Structure formats: C-alpha cells, structure tokens
Amino acid sequence: MRERLEAAVQGLDADYCEIRVENATSTHIGYRIRELESIGSSAALGGNIRAAVDGGWGFVSFNELDGLEEKVALAVRQARQAARDGTRLAPVEPATEVVPTEVVKDPAEVSLADKKALMDEYVEAALSVSDKIQTSQIYYSDSFRKVRFASSAGSFIEQDRMQVRAAGSISAREGAEIQTGRTSRTSTSDFGAVEGLHEEFAGAGQRAVDLLKASPARSGEFVVVMDPTLASVFIHEAFGHLSEADHVYENPPLRELLELGKEFGPPILNVVDSAAEPGLSGSFKYDAEGVPAGKNYLIEEGRLVGRLHSRETAGQMGEALTGNARAISYRHPPIVRMTNTSIEAGETSFADMIADIDEGIYAVNWLGGQTAMEMFTFRAMEGFMIRKGKLAEPLRGVTLTGNVFDTLKAIDAVGDDFRWDPGGGNCGKGGQSGLPVGNGAPHVRLARCVIGGV
Image 1 (tube, rainbow, N blue to C red):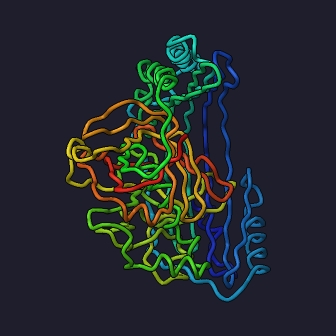
Image 2 (image 1 turned 180 degrees about the horizontal axis):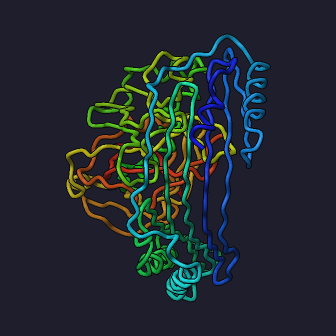
Image 3 (image 1 turned 30 degrees about the horizontal axis):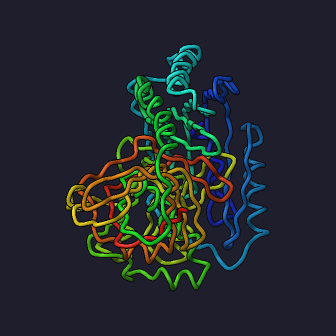
C-alpha cells in the first residue's frame, strides 16, 4: 500500500497533497440504569485526500481505495476552485517511520461477553449504594486505529493508536433535589486499567447521595481553591481553546488581545500543551500533517509565549510549528486541536494553600460548563467551605464564573501536587466531537472568583 499512496500524491499540479488511510476497530457497551442500551463491535476502512492550490483547499473522503487517482484529481480540482492568494504552509522535514503502540493487555483479546460481564458488575456497584439512586449512564468503549499518511512533501508515516475507557454518571434524587457523581478511567495501552473499578463506580453513586444532604453554595465572590481535576478542565476549556491559532489568525481583535509576550498571570503560572507525554489520551508521535509532536509552552512565568498551530496557521502567522493538527477520523480534515494540556506544578502544599483562608470555597471535580471567548462558567461536582484554614461543611451547586484573563491574574498559589486526570478527556470543536485529550494540574488557588449559588 505504501507505494500506491506515495505515487498518488506525486507529480500533481498542486502546491501540496496528502493522503490518510485508516483501519479502525471498536467496541461499545452502554447502559441506562440496568438496561443495556447498546452493545457491539465494528470495523471500518476509510481515508481522505487533502490538496492545496493557491491557498484553497480540497478535501475528499472515501471508503475504498479503488479509483484513488480520480479521488486525488477531484481534491485538486476542488482546491483550485477555492484558490485565493497563495498557499503558505510552514515547512516540515519529511519523515518515514512506523510507530507501533505498546500494549500491556489488549482489549481485542478480551471477549465481548467478558467486557459486558465486567460492566454489569459496575452497574450493580453504582446502583446498589442507595435506593435514592434514580438514574445512571455507564459505558465502556475501546478502539484501535492504524493510520497511514503520505504527503507530497515526501513523508510516509504509519501510526497505531489504542484507547480503552470505562465511565459512569450516576444521579440520586430526594424530593425535587437531584445530584450527580461521575467517574472515568482511560488507558492507551492496557485493558487492565479499566478492571477492578468497583469501588470507583460505587463511590460515584455515594457522592451523588451525599450531595443531597450538602448545603447549597452561597453566591458571591470568594477565595477559591480548585482541585487538580477542575483546574485542568478550566485551563483546557477556558484558555486552551483560545490558544488554538485557527481562532486567532483571521481575527485581528483576538490576535491583538492574545499578543505574544503579554502578561496573563503571575510568575508562578506555567501552562503547557504536549503530545510528547507518554501514555496519555492526547499523546502521539506525529500529528495528522506528519509534524512531530512536541512540548509547547503557552504561558511561561505568567507571560503568553506560544500558541498551537497547524502547518497553515504557522505559515500564515510566521510562527513555529507545534504539531497540533488533528482529525477525529478519516471523515474529517485536520484542524488545530489541543493534545495534553496542563498547569505545571508549583511549590505550595495543599495544607499551606488553605491555611490562611478565613472563609473560602474548595471546588472539586466538574460536572459541566461552557465558554464564550474569554467568558466561562463551570459547575463543580462537589465543594466544601473553607473556614479558618480547615475544610468544613460540604456544598452543592458550586458554579465558577468569570473572565478567563481576570481569573488567570487572580491565581496566587499553585500546588506542588500535580497529577494527570486518569479519566482522560474528550474534546469537541468544529463538528469533531470526542477527540481524545489529556488534562493535568495541581491544586490552584484564586484570590477571588465569582461563585453562583442561591
């Protein structure tokens, strides 16, 4: 196949052309309460061609290799019809490499019946906690993809990728009050990572029940400490998407706002996006354009020092490549996406972080939220009052809201207890939802943050 793909992208009347061919297998199991809503396995072969002519792009996806040359010609014609003012792609060194995935316990060697039996146990573990459990959604998925990439720049890269995931959302009810607990676990190499999670699923159910008795959070401005999970989701959602250069390079006001070198936080704040971290959901060796993965600082010692790029955005903005062109499948063209985004560890222990807080809020994990440019709203899964340096009564309905730039500047302590979220994450953008990403952070303290409550 390599010779055929390489030949198809050479000698064309185009500035650039690439082909991706993907073989994929997957399994899914889904429950609503105890009802098995979906179960099955699937396999797919597909690919796409992307061509550039004078700044215009053509894109053709397919499910069979027959007529490949005609499909390439169609992509080139599309690109020519969309031509604008010249193709500017940041240069990349051609690469030829086979990148296998390291597998500890292969989910392909575990029967569908055994996977279902395991998930049956997790359903019972969650639902047996209390008769107050009203509903739950619990699911399992695994996938394996082999992607072959050939470009007119001379690259041929073959990469394997595996993911296995088990997750659940469990809700409890008392009267009109409904509260939810969640858990998830993801691995890129080991089915064993989703085994033995009975206590985690039971714990999610118990958190939902316990939150029914928690006090409603008061609205107002507080000192807020975010736990590592909430802090990592905050930096991904509220700031990470603003760092994706396709939002910036055709938006002059946003480009001015996000001027490199500008101070965005205190010197203790360092924000990184890195696909080079081993074994995480957003890790890979080459992105969807054959650009090597790297570790890219976005904020260093409080100042904006970088953003995330595809070859086109880097070429348009005259900035360095970062290896952040990603596509969720062969049905979509690559766009600029985060990989594993994190706040680096600081030097403050959690005990010291809360010791001088007379009255504040400890916000733990997350249930949901939304962002609109620099404005954000996040709902914590649970919370606790902080009183005179100690954790006090549990809270429900803790919602953080504000302007991301004001909030970054309000950071006055970064914890020494960094961790990656073992549940990984799934990110949505541009009609491509469910892209695997990683999130990490230590505890982070905000000197002030608006809390929505009662």
